[in-house]
Amino acid sequence: MSYVTVEVPRTLSDLIPRPAARTRQLARDAALVLGFALLTAALAQVRINLSFTPVPITGQTFAVLLSGAVLGANRGGLAQLAYWALGIVAPVPWYAGDHSGTSIKAGWHLATGSTAGYLAGFVVAAFVVGLLAQQGQDRRFSSSVPAMLTGTAIIYACGLVWLAHSLHIPIATGHPNAVEYGLTPFLAGDALKLLLAGALTPVAWRFFDR
Image: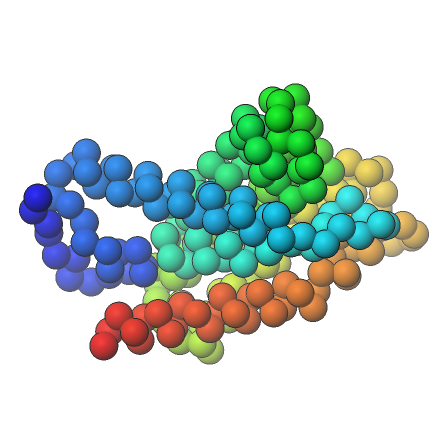
């Protein structure tokens, strides 16, 4: 098996040796995409359900931000698109709040339900964070955290718009509203997750540089 050297890695995944054969390159990329889709599904099971909102507290956004930073724009976005699509047919609990995971009907309901905006936001956020990582913004804590904050803001924006539409409530005015249900309870936890993701990537770059 022969490998080619990547002289200027743009993302952390580029540090993994790339096979010379095209089919092996595709297999490598597919494994990375699937791996981060599975990581997102695993962290979706780390959840705290809240009685007043259909949106649970989970670890998913941490995986979303990392998928963009590690894989780059295209593969990061594909990983989250795969997470969204595979949840429809997965025979095991997959999404946050999925207690059955045993039928396509149940998967489709969750994939298109009140939290579907967050799932769409995952795809866009991973792509944008990946673009920023390809420009080197994940290599220093001072630039990595803003990149992760941008991704988190995208997830919130997509999630809140769809949540308001699905529940027939305003986004930010009146009571109840989408901000109360889908943003305020999650700010502290998501701040910790974006800080952790923003700290991990510079550490990883320094480790591989050595």
